[in-house]
Image 1 (cartoon, rainbow, N blue to C red):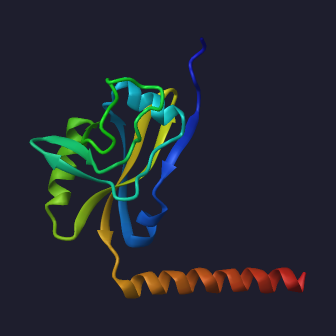
Image 2: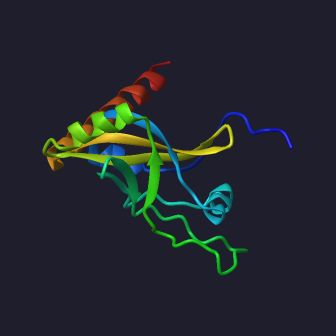
Length: 154
């Protein structure tokens, strides 16, 4: 069987871009069990309430929902179990320093397969205030109106 090439997106966390200012992004591998991989290949996962945290020099992905594999047996996994993330030691050291700052958190943005391996795009983020969210929505709507006006003129 030939190896997979390219990137296949499984799940995205669109809400994270609305609720947080994204400062930096990291790509991390995931330590998964067999039934978790099969469930992901079926395209089933949710990043809605997910977050990552550093514990004892390791980064863990918490509260990400990967449903049980439909054809699994008693060896099925727990849907919301903590999953270890695979990052370089230098990246973990940076994350430890940056997450100690007040208001910073690690949020998963996207879960995908890259060349057959499960990866997660992790963002170092700061929470937005409600007026920041309203400002971003107003800017987006203004840009949409400008585009519409330009299309009507043509």
